[in-house]
Image (cartoon, rainbow, N blue to C red; front, side, top):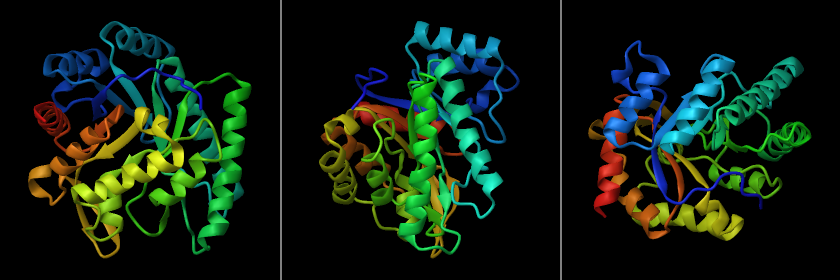
Length: 282
Protein backbone atom coordinates (compact mmCIF):
# COMPACT_ATOMS: atom_id res chain seq x y z
CA UNK A 1 0.00 0.00 0.00
CA UNK A 2 1.05 3.57 -0.57
CA UNK A 3 2.37 5.75 2.21
CA UNK A 4 1.19 9.28 1.53
CA UNK A 5 2.22 10.75 4.88
CA UNK A 6 4.68 9.64 7.54
CA UNK A 7 3.21 9.24 11.04
CA UNK A 8 5.36 8.13 13.98
CA UNK A 9 2.92 8.23 16.92
CA UNK A 10 -0.72 8.54 17.93
CA UNK A 11 -1.74 12.20 17.57
CA UNK A 12 -4.65 13.86 19.39
CA UNK A 13 -6.69 16.29 17.30
CA UNK A 14 -9.57 18.66 18.01
CA UNK A 15 -12.68 18.53 15.79
CA UNK A 16 -12.47 21.99 14.29
CA UNK A 17 -11.15 25.02 16.12
CA UNK A 18 -10.95 24.96 19.94
CA UNK A 19 -13.79 26.75 21.72
CA UNK A 20 -11.31 29.27 23.13
CA UNK A 21 -10.53 30.45 19.59
CA UNK A 22 -13.48 32.84 19.56
CA UNK A 23 -13.22 35.02 16.47
CA UNK A 24 -9.48 34.50 16.16
CA UNK A 25 -9.74 32.07 13.26
CA UNK A 26 -7.10 29.52 12.31
CA UNK A 27 -4.10 31.60 13.51
CA UNK A 28 -5.47 31.72 17.08
CA UNK A 29 -6.72 28.14 16.91
CA UNK A 30 -3.26 26.79 16.16
CA UNK A 31 -1.76 28.93 18.94
CA UNK A 32 -4.18 27.32 21.40
CA UNK A 33 -3.33 23.81 20.17
CA UNK A 34 0.35 24.54 20.70
CA UNK A 35 -0.24 26.08 24.15
CA UNK A 36 -2.22 22.99 25.23
CA UNK A 37 0.28 20.53 23.80
CA UNK A 38 -2.24 19.06 21.34
CA UNK A 39 -1.22 17.62 18.01
CA UNK A 40 -3.50 19.09 15.38
CA UNK A 41 -7.03 19.58 14.12
CA UNK A 42 -9.69 18.06 11.91
CA UNK A 43 -10.89 20.86 9.62
CA UNK A 44 -14.66 20.53 9.39
CA UNK A 45 -16.27 21.43 6.08
CA UNK A 46 -19.78 21.12 7.48
CA UNK A 47 -21.84 22.91 4.82
CA UNK A 48 -19.34 23.07 1.97
CA UNK A 49 -15.64 22.95 1.11
CA UNK A 50 -14.66 26.55 1.65
CA UNK A 51 -11.09 27.65 2.33
CA UNK A 52 -9.31 30.45 0.47
CA UNK A 53 -5.98 29.85 -1.27
CA UNK A 54 -4.31 32.20 1.22
CA UNK A 55 -5.72 30.26 4.18
CA UNK A 56 -4.67 26.94 2.63
CA UNK A 57 -1.17 28.35 2.30
CA UNK A 58 -1.20 29.51 5.93
CA UNK A 59 -2.44 26.14 7.25
CA UNK A 60 0.16 24.31 5.16
CA UNK A 61 2.91 26.58 6.51
CA UNK A 62 1.88 26.19 10.18
CA UNK A 63 1.43 22.44 9.73
CA UNK A 64 5.03 22.10 8.55
CA UNK A 65 6.51 24.55 11.09
CA UNK A 66 4.77 23.06 14.13
CA UNK A 67 4.56 19.45 12.90
CA UNK A 68 0.79 19.42 13.35
CA UNK A 69 -1.34 16.64 11.90
CA UNK A 70 -4.33 18.08 10.02
CA UNK A 71 -7.26 16.05 8.70
CA UNK A 72 -10.54 17.10 7.10
CA UNK A 73 -14.17 16.07 7.45
CA UNK A 74 -16.14 16.37 4.22
CA UNK A 75 -19.55 18.10 4.25
CA UNK A 76 -22.43 16.24 5.87
CA UNK A 77 -24.54 16.38 2.68
CA UNK A 78 -23.12 13.20 1.21
CA UNK A 79 -25.03 10.10 0.15
CA UNK A 80 -23.36 7.91 -2.46
CA UNK A 81 -26.54 5.81 -2.51
CA UNK A 82 -29.08 8.57 -3.08
CA UNK A 83 -32.05 7.72 -5.30
CA UNK A 84 -31.35 10.98 -7.16
CA UNK A 85 -28.38 10.75 -9.51
CA UNK A 86 -27.55 14.45 -9.19
CA UNK A 87 -27.16 14.02 -5.40
CA UNK A 88 -24.79 11.10 -5.94
CA UNK A 89 -22.74 13.21 -8.35
CA UNK A 90 -22.72 16.14 -5.91
CA UNK A 91 -21.57 13.79 -3.15
CA UNK A 92 -18.68 12.53 -5.29
CA UNK A 93 -17.71 16.12 -6.06
CA UNK A 94 -17.74 17.11 -2.37
CA UNK A 95 -15.43 14.24 -1.45
CA UNK A 96 -13.03 15.13 -4.28
CA UNK A 97 -13.09 18.83 -3.32
CA UNK A 98 -12.34 17.92 0.31
CA UNK A 99 -9.40 15.75 -0.74
CA UNK A 100 -8.04 18.43 -3.07
CA UNK A 101 -8.27 21.17 -0.42
CA UNK A 102 -6.75 18.93 2.25
CA UNK A 103 -3.91 18.12 -0.12
CA UNK A 104 -3.32 21.85 -0.63
CA UNK A 105 -3.03 22.49 3.11
CA UNK A 106 -0.77 19.52 3.79
CA UNK A 107 -3.46 17.26 5.24
CA UNK A 108 -3.06 13.68 6.39
CA UNK A 109 -6.42 12.25 5.36
CA UNK A 110 -10.10 13.04 4.88
CA UNK A 111 -13.22 11.34 6.19
CA UNK A 112 -16.93 11.38 5.38
CA UNK A 113 -20.24 9.62 6.05
CA UNK A 114 -20.58 7.69 2.81
CA UNK A 115 -24.21 6.62 2.38
CA UNK A 116 -27.62 5.59 3.67
CA UNK A 117 -29.17 2.21 2.89
CA UNK A 118 -32.41 3.84 1.65
CA UNK A 119 -34.29 0.58 2.18
CA UNK A 120 -31.97 -1.42 -0.08
CA UNK A 121 -30.13 -4.60 0.87
CA UNK A 122 -26.57 -4.33 2.13
CA UNK A 123 -24.89 -5.94 -0.88
CA UNK A 124 -26.63 -3.64 -3.37
CA UNK A 125 -25.58 -0.58 -1.37
CA UNK A 126 -22.04 -1.88 -0.96
CA UNK A 127 -21.69 -2.22 -4.72
CA UNK A 128 -23.07 1.28 -5.29
CA UNK A 129 -20.62 2.77 -2.75
CA UNK A 130 -17.81 0.78 -4.37
CA UNK A 131 -18.73 2.06 -7.84
CA UNK A 132 -18.72 5.69 -6.69
CA UNK A 133 -15.51 5.20 -4.70
CA UNK A 134 -13.86 3.90 -7.89
CA UNK A 135 -14.78 7.15 -9.64
CA UNK A 136 -13.39 9.21 -6.75
CA UNK A 137 -10.10 7.31 -6.63
CA UNK A 138 -9.63 7.49 -10.40
CA UNK A 139 -10.10 11.27 -10.42
CA UNK A 140 -7.72 11.73 -7.48
CA UNK A 141 -5.09 9.55 -9.17
CA UNK A 142 -5.53 11.37 -12.48
CA UNK A 143 -4.94 14.70 -10.72
CA UNK A 144 -2.08 13.32 -8.60
CA UNK A 145 -3.90 14.09 -5.34
CA UNK A 146 -2.20 11.89 -2.76
CA UNK A 147 -4.66 11.79 0.12
CA UNK A 148 -6.22 9.02 2.18
CA UNK A 149 -9.97 8.94 1.72
CA UNK A 150 -11.75 7.27 4.59
CA UNK A 151 -15.42 6.39 4.91
CA UNK A 152 -16.35 6.68 8.58
CA UNK A 153 -18.09 4.03 10.66
CA UNK A 154 -21.60 5.27 11.30
CA UNK A 155 -23.79 5.37 14.40
CA UNK A 156 -27.16 4.14 13.10
CA UNK A 157 -28.23 0.97 11.34
CA UNK A 158 -29.95 3.07 8.66
CA UNK A 159 -26.53 4.39 7.62
CA UNK A 160 -24.11 2.42 5.48
CA UNK A 161 -20.80 1.89 7.22
CA UNK A 162 -20.38 -0.72 9.90
CA UNK A 163 -16.72 -1.50 10.40
CA UNK A 164 -16.88 -4.75 8.42
CA UNK A 165 -18.22 -2.93 5.35
CA UNK A 166 -15.55 -0.25 5.55
CA UNK A 167 -12.73 -2.77 6.01
CA UNK A 168 -14.06 -4.63 2.97
CA UNK A 169 -14.12 -1.45 0.87
CA UNK A 170 -10.58 -0.58 2.01
CA UNK A 171 -9.34 -3.89 0.60
CA UNK A 172 -10.59 -2.86 -2.85
CA UNK A 173 -8.65 0.42 -3.21
CA UNK A 174 -5.12 1.42 -2.30
CA UNK A 175 -6.14 4.99 -1.52
CA UNK A 176 -8.97 3.99 0.86
CA UNK A 177 -8.59 3.19 4.58
CA UNK A 178 -11.16 3.23 7.39
CA UNK A 179 -12.02 6.06 9.72
CA UNK A 180 -13.04 4.16 12.84
CA UNK A 181 -15.47 6.11 15.00
CA UNK A 182 -15.48 4.03 18.19
CA UNK A 183 -18.38 6.00 19.66
CA UNK A 184 -20.51 5.34 16.58
CA UNK A 185 -19.76 1.61 16.75
CA UNK A 186 -20.69 1.62 20.45
CA UNK A 187 -24.00 3.39 19.70
CA UNK A 188 -24.82 1.41 16.54
CA UNK A 189 -24.63 -1.86 18.44
CA UNK A 190 -26.67 -0.67 21.42
CA UNK A 191 -23.89 -0.30 23.99
CA UNK A 192 -21.58 -3.11 22.88
CA UNK A 193 -17.97 -2.52 21.85
CA UNK A 194 -17.07 -0.75 25.07
CA UNK A 195 -14.50 -3.04 26.71
CA UNK A 196 -10.79 -3.54 26.25
CA UNK A 197 -11.32 -6.94 24.62
CA UNK A 198 -13.98 -5.59 22.25
CA UNK A 199 -11.77 -2.68 21.20
CA UNK A 200 -8.93 -5.12 20.63
CA UNK A 201 -11.25 -7.23 18.46
CA UNK A 202 -11.78 -4.27 16.11
CA UNK A 203 -8.07 -3.44 15.95
CA UNK A 204 -7.13 -7.07 15.44
CA UNK A 205 -9.63 -7.36 12.59
CA UNK A 206 -8.16 -4.30 10.90
CA UNK A 207 -4.63 -5.65 11.32
CA UNK A 208 -5.59 -9.08 10.01
CA UNK A 209 -7.59 -7.84 7.01
CA UNK A 210 -5.59 -4.75 6.02
CA UNK A 211 -2.21 -5.41 7.64
CA UNK A 212 -0.16 -3.53 10.21
CA UNK A 213 0.06 -0.72 7.67
CA UNK A 214 -3.54 0.25 8.50
CA UNK A 215 -2.75 0.40 12.23
CA UNK A 216 0.31 2.53 11.52
CA UNK A 217 -1.74 4.93 9.38
CA UNK A 218 -4.88 5.18 11.51
CA UNK A 219 -7.66 7.77 11.60
CA UNK A 220 -10.24 7.51 14.36
CA UNK A 221 -12.98 9.50 16.09
CA UNK A 222 -14.00 9.30 19.73
CA UNK A 223 -16.42 11.17 22.01
CA UNK A 224 -18.90 10.58 24.74
CA UNK A 225 -22.17 9.51 23.15
CA UNK A 226 -25.87 9.28 23.87
CA UNK A 227 -27.76 6.54 22.05
CA UNK A 228 -31.09 4.75 21.87
CA UNK A 229 -32.22 1.43 20.39
CA UNK A 230 -32.00 3.18 17.00
CA UNK A 231 -28.36 4.13 17.53
CA UNK A 232 -26.52 7.41 17.91
CA UNK A 233 -28.43 10.40 19.24
CA UNK A 234 -25.79 13.02 20.06
CA UNK A 235 -22.23 13.51 21.24
CA UNK A 236 -21.55 14.12 24.93
CA UNK A 237 -18.53 14.97 27.03
CA UNK A 238 -16.92 11.85 28.46
CA UNK A 239 -18.00 12.71 32.00
CA UNK A 240 -21.68 12.48 30.98
CA UNK A 241 -21.32 9.29 28.94
CA UNK A 242 -20.70 5.57 29.42
CA UNK A 243 -18.01 5.59 26.70
CA UNK A 244 -15.07 3.63 28.08
CA UNK A 245 -12.31 5.81 26.67
CA UNK A 246 -9.69 4.54 29.12
CA UNK A 247 -9.90 0.95 27.91
CA UNK A 248 -9.90 2.14 24.31
CA UNK A 249 -6.70 4.11 24.85
CA UNK A 250 -5.16 1.06 26.53
CA UNK A 251 -6.07 -1.02 23.47
CA UNK A 252 -4.61 1.57 21.10
CA UNK A 253 -1.43 1.54 23.18
CA UNK A 254 -1.29 -2.27 23.17
CA UNK A 255 -1.48 -2.33 19.38
CA UNK A 256 0.97 0.59 19.08
CA UNK A 257 -1.49 2.39 16.82
CA UNK A 258 -0.11 5.44 15.00
CA UNK A 259 -2.10 8.15 13.27
CA UNK A 260 -4.84 10.63 14.21
CA UNK A 261 -7.42 10.36 16.99
CA UNK A 262 -10.00 13.15 16.73
CA UNK A 263 -11.96 13.84 19.92
CA UNK A 264 -15.46 14.96 18.93
CA UNK A 265 -16.71 15.86 22.41
CA UNK A 266 -18.73 19.11 22.63
CA UNK A 267 -16.15 20.69 24.93
CA UNK A 268 -13.59 20.13 22.13
CA UNK A 269 -10.15 20.95 23.54
CA UNK A 270 -10.82 19.86 27.15
CA UNK A 271 -11.67 16.24 26.31
CA UNK A 272 -8.97 16.09 23.64
CA UNK A 273 -6.47 17.10 26.33
CA UNK A 274 -8.03 14.55 28.71
CA UNK A 275 -7.43 11.78 26.16
CA UNK A 276 -3.86 12.76 25.45
CA UNK A 277 -2.93 13.12 29.11
CA UNK A 278 -4.39 9.72 29.99
CA UNK A 279 -2.72 8.06 27.01
CA UNK A 280 0.68 9.49 27.96
CA UNK A 281 0.19 8.23 31.52
CA UNK A 282 -0.07 4.60 30.35
